[in-house]
Image 1 (cartoon, rainbow, N blue to C red):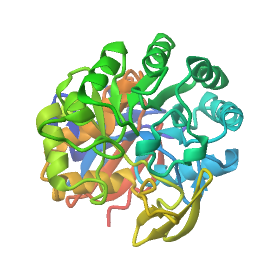
Image 2: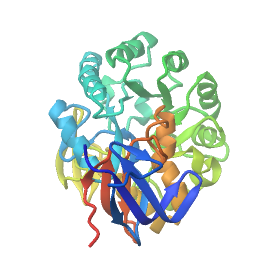
Image 3: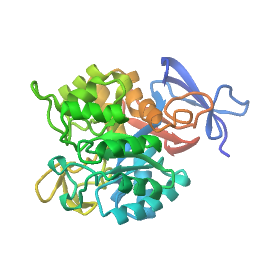
Image 4: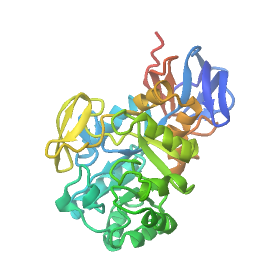
Length: 381
């Protein structure tokens, strides 16, 4: 077991606020409230210490896919995102043949059982062809509760979330089924009206998949799903803060109406995250990444992102002007709560996993710890 550590002198973001000249005590794999005598002390004056990032929605990275790769590919993608501060990640699938999705879920479930990923998110195939984005239209289908149940069962208790176009036939019954099985029902890739979205929320939906993207725009006569999802306190809204998916004003609108307690930053990353430009596959769809922006080769739709959560954090503070405490809520505490993991991760409290990120004064990442072990650094210069 690694020696106990005291991270001292940093600005430490706690659930109650930021503690100047604070300290975090790490004993083994957990955060402790008292330090053993032999603990090593690391001076982090001039730095920030924040909880490890929690990503609800991620399709891969490092040149590897969560959506179609084998176990080694998934682990490669997980390691890439850990280098960027994401200590807890949900592996997201994309639309595919139902039997393939079930087999793939079985493999992902084994990695979840080993603690490498926090669970499985099914994005598709039960989404609207009108708002398909980077999903293969030929493989889309209405959300039949029996087929939804097949994927839940294939995940062996590790299904965490499913994105649905809840206005489609079977959509509301599928939301109810997911809710009964403890799986998050997320409204996304949807062409629903305002009223239809409210019905989905009443049926049990609790998340908006990448709000604003892959849904009708906000209208003054036809407000659509965006208004319903923003105004309802039962909904947490995902936001992709990469400067491509959202204009800064849209992000500010979401924070203003939902509040920091109902926002979850996600990457929606695909293989190119942390890797570079080039040609990739997102499920069965070919993607071209140029200047860090991923688009389908056929049709040009945005195809996920190349975002990592350390970049989302820095942008939120330095470009969007959000308080650091609000960003920590959106990138750690809120997604941990949604996943049912708030007793273990998402905040720097005694008894929780020693998952944390060290940032310099300019909010660049200089250190990552996962379960008491340094993944990165700390590189203090």
